[in-house]
Length: 298
Image 1 (tube, one colour):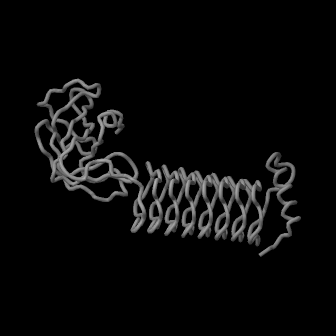
Image 2 (spheres, rainbow, N blue to C red; image 1 turned 180 degrees about the vertical axis):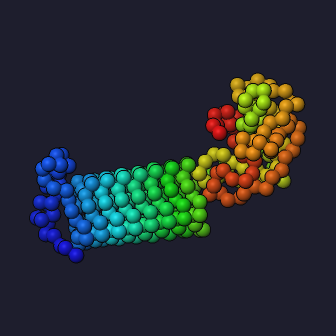
């Protein structure tokens, strides 16, 4: 691996800064396969730099700008990336085990297949990040923003997910054994209670059904959204989306399965998928508030 003196690194950063301002001047930082172990690059602007396969283990990259940088297969083990900007960066297959990424911005970054075991990602911005099949075993993700993130097949076992926002994230196939999970149970765990559902209606287009989730019903809340599922419900009443009563003799249908019908006064039963990692699956979907049901778009 190629090594650089501090003066050589400063010259590379100077030319890179010129290139970022005007690509006819200076030159893009090419640090492919570079040996930068323990280097102090705090606050450096390496946006769009080529760092593929570089060894940055234990380097100080706090507050560095690495947005759009190519760090594919780079070694960032135990590196300090606190408050760093890694938006849109390519970290495919990178080694970030034990790395310090507190409050880092990793929005829309590609971390597919990355090793993040034991990494500190607390308070990080991971909006829209690709963490497909990444290893996050034992990582600290407390307070992180993981909205719309792809975590399919990721290993989150023993990870700290307290206070994490997983809205619209993809957790299909993710391992969550022994993980500390965020608060996600929003419906009563026992007894009867009321829920609300939007269904198709032949006379009004859509109707909002007032449901009674029965005492012997399964009730499943999801880690990734506010839509819940039940196995046994009774339709108590029906309204238009603007709150006017609907003829109780009408038949209402599921948007997903038109053959599945609801009628006021009738109890319906289905098998419900108890997997908390998914929001839309087998079961009778409902919301805890009428407002959420009204605003829901099929």
